[in-house]
Image (cartoon, rainbow, N blue to C red; front, side, top):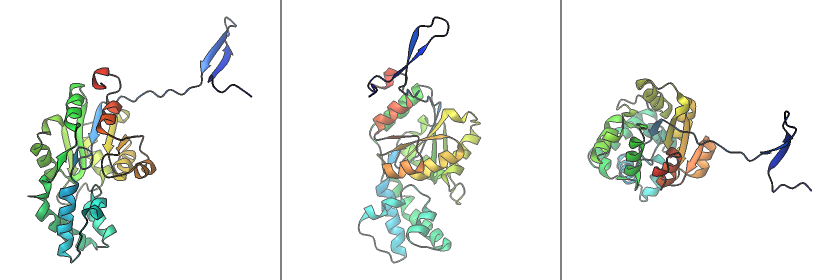
Length: 253
């Protein structure tokens, strides 16, 4: 039986004819990204309460009663219009009406039923200190995203805020990502990574030609992120920090 414990192969140097041992262990270089695109809901902030309560408010308008907000967890992340059509079997017109009702509650109340994930502000600070270009790429309307960042005093950490339009434009994550890349003249895509918690983040990033790291502390699960093709999956903000700042021990203590 061959010895599989020592993963090395022996070759002979052509010049000296001495044996040379080469390790067959695979060592992956940690990719160092210069541009960090972050999703908002489920990645930077825990917005489930405000979103689900606003969706429940909208559904009540259609005579649909929801007692357990966890039943509406699946609505957090994907475009709302698509979710209403998929999960509630709404027509396009009904979905548009549902969005209007949703915003009645969300605009003044639901938007603030929200919290920054523990450790996230510190991570944003350290990314800025490491001279990373931090940008937001969210499916939420940019108008609301900017208000949320302002509310939590996070705006100064972000070089650019990319989101959908209140008119329904840029409703898919790939469109938002391309919008961010184009508006910042980012062409070296190998240096860009998208961070998100749902399959839409992963698929959008892949379609736009950039890497994506999936996070498990949001609203997706490992199976969803794996099937979507995430390059890496992390379980916590601390693990995300280690993935984004791998070379500097100062940021991994």
